[in-house]
Every structure is written in C-alpha cells, then in structure tokens.
Length: 217
Image (tube, rainbow, N blue to C red; front, side, top):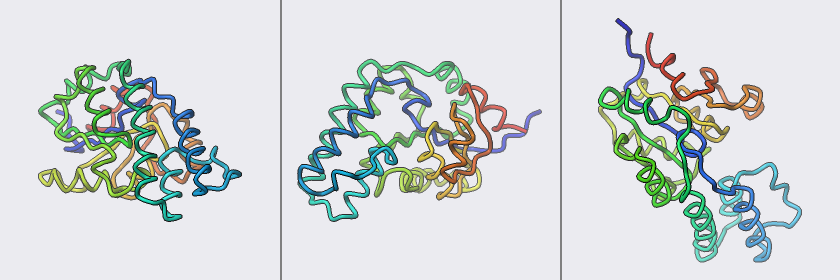
C-alpha cells in the first residue's frame, strides 16, 4: 500500500489549475504607465525583469501613496475579472482534484483578487474542492513573499508544517514556497528558468496529475 508523504497541498491557480485569458503583459504595462505618470517609478525602469506583483511591491517600497495603491489594484482587478470570465481548466485538473478530495487539505494561493479567483473557480466547478482560497487581500505581501502560504498554514493547523507541498508554474510561486519552507513542484516550466531565479524544486511536471508521483511513496 502506498505511503502518503503529505497532508496539505498549496496550488497556484492561474496556468496551474486554470487557463485564463488575463493579459498580464497589458496589465503590467498599464500599471507601469500609471505609476510613471505620477512620478512614482522612473520611465526607464526595466519592467521586463518584473512581474506585476514585484513592480507594485517596488513602488510600495518607494512610499506609494494609499490612494495611488488603491488605483493600481483597481487596474489589476479590472484585467483579472475580464480575463477570468472565459477561464478554462488545465488538462486533467478536475479529475485530479476529485481524486485528492477528502484525503488532502487542498488550498489555493494566488496573487489575483479573491473575487476574481472565486469567480473563476466557481464557474469551472473547482471551488468546492478547496478548504481555503487565498487571494491578494489575504496576504501582507504578494508572492514571491511567503505571506499567502503563512496565511494558509495558520488556518490549517491540523496539517503539520513538514506535511505541506506546493505546485505552481512561475518562479514567484517557487520562491514563496522556498521562503515558507515548503517543498515545491514546478508545473510546465523549464528547470533552467527556476534555477536562474534561485528556486529549489523537487522536479518538474508537465500534467497536473503527475503530481501524484510526488505525493506517495
């Protein structure tokens, strides 16, 4: 009989469980232009090196005014809600979650708004699988900060710290997991990309169902 290695799983959502139509490049560019126009960020800032999350975090470190921060998140929410309206499932996501339901504590940690995440998970029929869905409102700081992971772990105390595992497609997911001390699986991302960002991972999977190979021994 297979031995279970973990009791809790923290999933990234976008491009891990769901395929959304969020135009992340356009969202980042609109936010960047907004912050440059208000002289928060320099116009020559190398935004290719940033995600939307790290761009905003950098602006906050430069003392982003509360009213400007609210406007920035409103821009992000606009893009997220629009992109999630037509969200579809990653291949095998629904049956995989169904196979884990009741055996594992299943959670989501995503940098997008809780409203957009919940909308997408409900319309794709996945929401009921999760014990916790944590959006950016539940975090003190966005991934790559481990804040969202800490939020989940504090509310799922029945799962020991060493019995969590995480999966995601982006380096910020891996960094957050590493900082939280949780093993990380890379989803459909070249190992070299994760390594170049200093992410330590258990391995790379190409389909979400392959995660089962890492959950049991």
